[in-house]
Length: 153
Image 1 (spheres, one colour):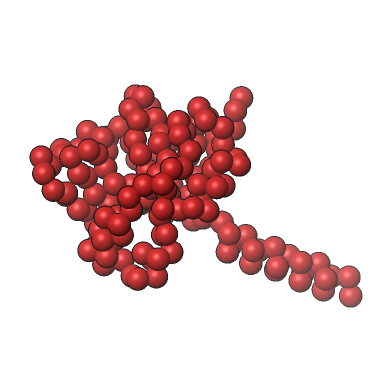
Image 2 (image 1 turned 180 degrees about the vertical axis):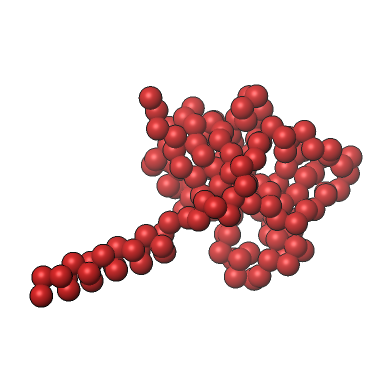
């Protein structure tokens, strides 16, 4: 009889972990500096098939309101579902520094931006799980899906 409550609690825990955890295996190890060195169009935008990437960067600015209408149009252009576009709900941009020190703005949703303010100090390294969507004359268009603070030693 004592085993049943334990099994119920274990099942509930596993269900919650699956619902809230991110699947890191779907993100390929990447380099923000490599994205910055992709050829940039002189005008317009080069849109790519969405590519899920993982890289490490340093947080230099918390989320600030930014123009996200174009990001949403690109997502629709690459056949993202309406739900995916609405779920992305990117409304802010954070700024991170690449390994070589380049400042790069990244799109993030409001909940992610709020969580970032609570969990990460400016100047702290974070592992970023994102989607690379396009390159414009000013740089890459990257949407943050998740992040993890890197433990300070």
